[in-house]
Image (cartoon, rainbow, N blue to C red; front, side, top):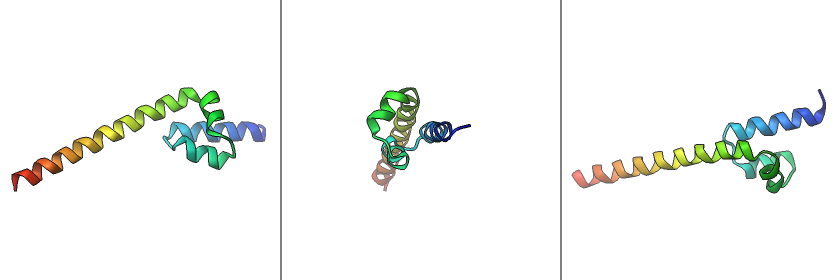
Length: 71
């Protein structure tokens, strides 16, 4: 195991966990463009997770507005 292997694993795990690429890049000391080139398959998963979070937010906001309208 090399330091590069550990770094690669750490970046992969962080992106797979949904940590924003800008944060991972800062922690790893690398540009976001490198992450986009090397880890694009993990960023796609991250984008899907972000879409799901946004959908959940819009649903919650819609429910709150509906509840306010009932008052």
